Length: 291
Ligand code: RM4
Ligand code: NI
Image (cartoon, rainbow, N blue to C red; front, side):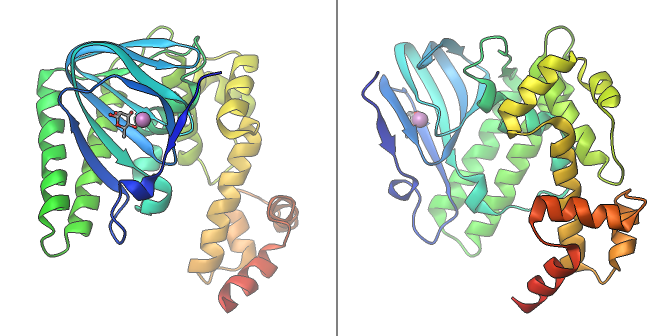
């Protein structure tokens, strides 16, 4: 085993600020294997080198853009003039609104699927930006940095919205490139966004196999790895999550909510809801309105 060190977000993010930090690594020095309690979005500007994990070596070069989950041990070595921008962030505590980015296959692939599948050698696709895209993204990053360090009025709000623009742009880049061939990662992203598009009904395995272009066994295996659940179970959970927000934010009746989410029998809906949340929709609504 390697001797690892663990970096903490609190040492990088200022208290009272959003969990977002831009580090210009020009150059990026060799860096031993480490983990952290935040994520990183890396854009390689120049040079090349090896980005390594416990199992694999990845050659990185100009234009590479990838996200690292903090709990995956990683480091840099054998660097030749490697310059990059490293954005430290924590989406869980940043509380950004998702709106329709949830329906972007590129978003799911970049931020969830790739980071989780990075140790799985059969899945190795990474976004590569061209020079125009690099300049565009770099400019956005520079603006975020200016906001974060300038601390003008409402700079947190402004930085968050610029970060949302950054996330949107790179997700679109990813969605727009051709994913023909062996791009299992992107197919998974499409599958998840298909599910998000169809929260108002149940979906079948047959449909998911069509969308994902994967065999049933690889789809099940990959899903288990990413979400810990089977695809159908994951989708059901997403529908129940949607039900929860309708129960809190609307005055719709439970029967209406059930129909809205494609359960044509509200008893069946309540049973599924209870299986997942250990309380009935009615109990959930009551409890939430009290707190
Ligand atoms: C290093 C390297 C690491 C990052 C730290 C904060 O230079 O980029 O990946 O975790 O900075
Ligand atoms: Ni790191």
